[in-house]
Length: 224
Ligand SMILES: *Cc1c(COP(=O)(O)O)cnc(C)c1O
Image 1 (cartoon, rainbow, N blue to C red):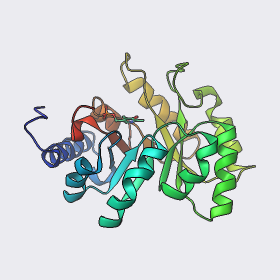
Image 2 (image 1 turned 180 degrees about the horizontal axis):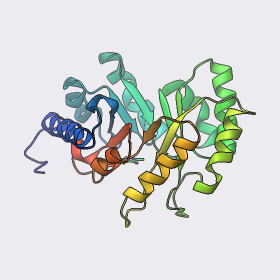
Image 3 (image 1 turned 180 degrees about the vertical axis):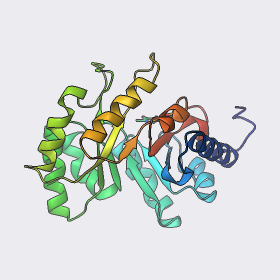
């Protein structure tokens, strides 16, 4: 895509068209898929036109960065949903619960406990997704696939957390579809119906494997 000539609003429309096409190709309805526009590293001025084009769900990977740039944008564009898609430290759980509508990166018991405490204390309940490290990559966040069932059960049981879905980021150097299929399988056997998977390079494959949320940054905002 010629991202330097096209505007972000134009690229957003193109991405929406591709999402709809990928959905129809596998017999799904386009409105089953939520586009999470990943605005990390981009300033408010770059996000504004995408909001202006009607996009209302955004992803950020850092709590601090989101809290610096989103209060103004949200005030100007009510009804905007913010997803935290990056690793979350337990000591930022309070900020994350207060600020985000969805936390996609729940991936370990200590964080689950911190989130449960804050949800209780604040009386605010963001949607929670468990991140699964489908490729078992040592440098990557996420619960290991073989530990996912027990972790989800612990979140739901003792901690009383409502788990809404699963998220994954497949290894960069492997075909993504087996990872998407694995995430879908873990979701099915745990009765979860939201799947956040697919980025700029692989979202059509993710939609084919059942993605309900695709997280797309560079195809909309340009190269970071
Ligand atoms: C940056 C990021 C994305 C978006 O990646 P693009 O390749 O720019 O679409 C999606 N998910 C996560 C977790 C990210 O950190």
